[in-house]
Image (cartoon, rainbow, N blue to C red; front, side, top):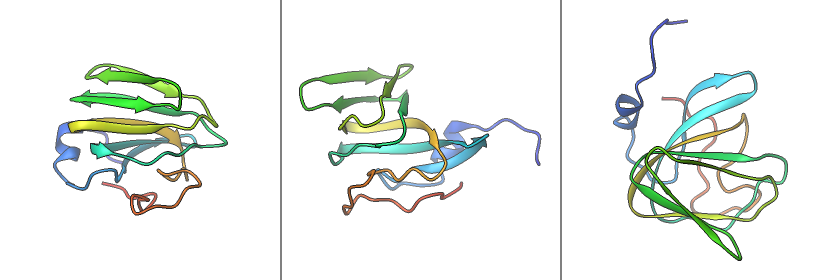
Length: 121
């Protein structure tokens, strides 16, 4: 195991696809994933787990059926398990996601934005 820090900026240069989280580390059964957001995602939920969004660069929104939360760089939000939500970003936004290993980005919903799971960079 290499003993060196993980540089988010370096890792973010290794891919360009939007809405396709890439794993950068694991801790116990949790994965730390980096993603680039732009435009609108799909409505979905994660029935068995909360989902953490940490904005590294840019701005994004997480829409809920009756509300929404706005996030900027340096802010985070935890979407509780089972809560339907839809992330979106007007411009490119860099995000870290923290969630249990095996979580699919679109939950149980399948769409053209469903990303391959467990892709490491």
